[in-house]
Image 1 (tube, rainbow, N blue to C red):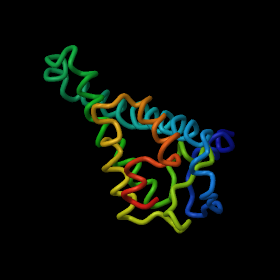
Image 2: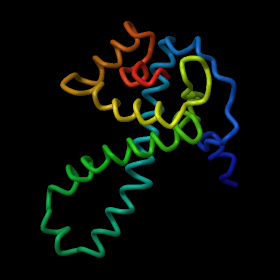
Image 3: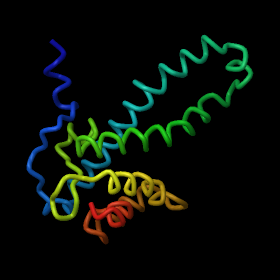
Length: 158
């Protein structure tokens, strides 16, 4: 019953034909933002939150001692978790569940499948895009100046 609802999120080895010419389209930049929000939701709510709950039960003393620092620490843990999640899905399937939902695909500049190295480079440089600059400015700059490609996309040639 729920399978048809999940089909819009599950990546498979069989990839659609890439449309490289749409990379600079402004709607694609919006879709990338929505895909990132979906992926962050999956990472935080479906992966990290259950782990936090188990840790709070198993290690109740230290967990309670953290008090108000639990949420900031969980957000700090989310950074490498999200990078690993994105790297793994993009390397193996060329897209994350959020990208599947938005109809996006990560490919090399020539349209071939994303490689291990390219996925690693683009995901390691994901945070360089946001260093010291608000995400809205980065999104606007990538939409207007770089043909819709992030710094990591240029470095990885994706």
